[in-house]
Image (cartoon, rainbow, N blue to C red; front, side, top):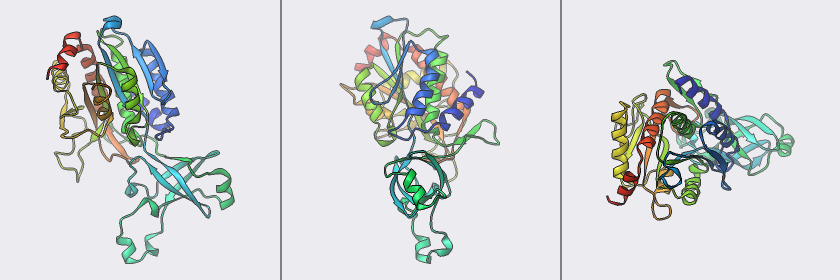
Length: 354
């Protein structure tokens, strides 16, 4: 798989709408991409997409769970106000990024509009100095109150609208929902790589639902599948002005390996060894507490599932201009494939002895 294929998949997946709790569109697309590379495929009752790939070790071989969440942040209609729509966040919306954004309300029909607020000219000096809140914002659909009431109901989902943009740098892409459709694409790259690579372990490729509202899909999937070990794929902060070097990672410098109590040290060392063997660049992120990713839920499922976290550097997280390097997505998938190939019975049996 190459960068053009990665970009094409990102364009299609980020164009899909999958606000937490209604991930049907990205789930269907993810399933379509995974289908050629897995032994069987299904969607569980929670909404997770699960593809299973048999290994050379057969039914008794260790099992690996690979998890990348398919949901995205968005909003929900909270009130209709004289033809305008007030809303509440679904996931971590930053009000500073919302003013002037195009949105789509998924009502009786899909209705596009823009997010507005009182113009600064009409605010007092004190009001202009106040921090912008979601409560200050509203959606203008360009419809009269009767039209709005006929199409929109309290509780309707709202998605952000932004097509994927290939930036002047060529390798750099920007858009909405790259957190975590980029991780989903890396998972698909891994599945494609493993078609031509023999691997001993059995692998579950899982597109998890509702990560942005409490890693819920990962809780369900890890409990139900009960794998021997796991890898979560997500994004982490990319370096940009205002981001301290200890908090951000370089775009184009490879995937980021999490290190800390949330991750099994033997697996961390194994993935770093694999990266060196395959001459794949990688970065290291110290995570002293529980990670804000699916890895947090997976680790404490059942009697405990040893795992690691691979992250893709991403600028401007939780905005509609999330920005990444396509090389990092490709490298993450390839590193993951090499790691899966390295798993054997000895590794898994040694995980109980730290």
